[in-house]
Amino acid sequence: FPSPTPGRQDLATRFADGFRYGFGAEVGISTGKMHARGPVGLEGLLSYKYQVYGNGHTVGGECPTVLNHKEIEKVSSASDIRAVLDPGARAELPAARRILVKVGSGVVTRSEGGGVALARLATLVEQLAHLVQSGREVVLVSSGGVAAGKRVIADPNPHHINKFASSSSLPIPSVPIQQLDPRVTPREEDQAEVKRWASATGQSKLMALYDHLFGVYDTNVAQLLISIPDLQFAHSRKATCRTIEGLMSQGIIPIVNENDAICTDRTDGDGSIDPNELPITDNDSIAAAIAVELKCDLVVLLSEVDGVYADPQNPVPMSVLTTADLEDGGIVFGAKSGAGRGGMESKVLASRYMMKNGVKSVIANGIL
Image (cartoon, rainbow, N blue to C red; front, side, top):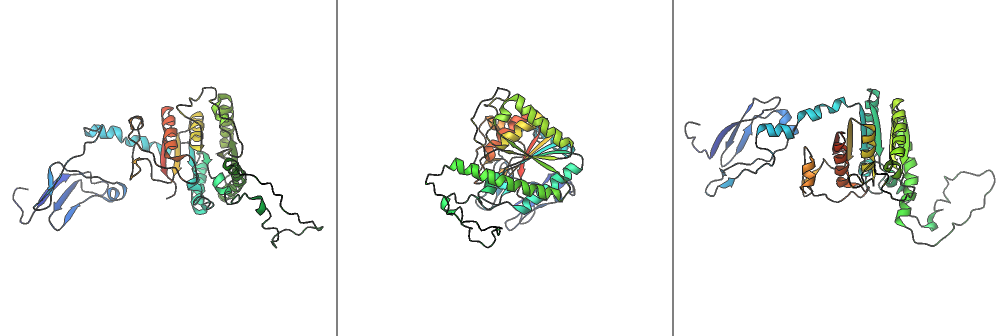
C-alpha cells in the first residue's frame, strides 16, 4: 500500500488460487482487534487444510511474534509441487474397471464384541452393487468374521453351553427327549483356539448378512476363505485368482476372508512373493497379493482413520505417500485397533508392495 493506514498493524495482499468460486486473489487485514482474509472459494474452504507460516512477519503490539517459514522438503518451486501432488493420478481412478475393496474389522463391526455395524455395511454394499451394475468388476476382502463371532463365543465355559435350555423358544420335539447336563471338561482355554471358534461361528453370520444385503440390489456374492499358504505359492495363488476372475465375469462379487478357523503352518512359500517385501499375515497383505495377481486398476483399503498420519499425535493425513516417506523413518505407526490385527503399518506395507507392482491404492476412512 502506498500510504500508511491509521491504526493499522499489518495490511497486505497476496495472490492465491481462489479455487472454483474465488476471485484469484486474496486480501489479508490484521489489526489488534480482528484478522480477516478472503475471498477463498467454496471448494477451498471445504476441501483443504492449511498450516500457514510467515518469514519475518510480526503479529502483536509491543512484543510482536515473529513467524518464520517452515522448509518444505523436496519442494523448491511450483513445478515440484505439481510433481508431488499429481492431479492426473487421482483423475484416472473413476475410470478403474477392476476394483478391490478391503474393509477391516473396525469398519465392519461397531466395536470389539459389539456386533456388526449394519448401517455402515449397508452403505458399503449399496456402493459396491452400484459399481458392479455400472460394468465394473469388484472383489471385496472383508474382515469381521472373528469379531462377529465373539458375541456368540462370549463365554467358552462348558458350564454355560446349555444356558438357554429352559427357554420357551426351544423347538417342541415330537417325542420327549431327556435333558442332559452339559459335559464338563476342565481345561484352560487357548485364546488362539477361541479365536478359531469365533471365526467359524461369525463367518457364516457375516456371509448371510452380505448375501441378504447384496440381494436387495439383485447382486450375487460368493465366499472364498483363503489360507495364507494358498497365496505363498504361485500355482495355488494363480488358481485362486482364476476362480475370482471367473466369478467376476458372471457379475458376482467374490467376498474373500482369511480362513481363521483353520490352523496352518507358516511357510515362506516358493519365493514368488518375497516374504521380506510382503509378509502375508492378514487381510491387508492378502488383498495386496490378490490385487497384484489380478492386475487390479484400483485398491481401496478402508480403515477407521482418515488416512496415513506422519505422527499419530498429530492426526493430519498425508495426501501422497512415497517410498521415500517409508524409507527415511518419517512415519510413526500407532496402536492397532481392538477389533482387528492388521493396523495402519500393515496397510502401508501392502500399498507399497502394490505400488511397486503397478497397482494404485488408496487408504481411506471407511467409517464416515
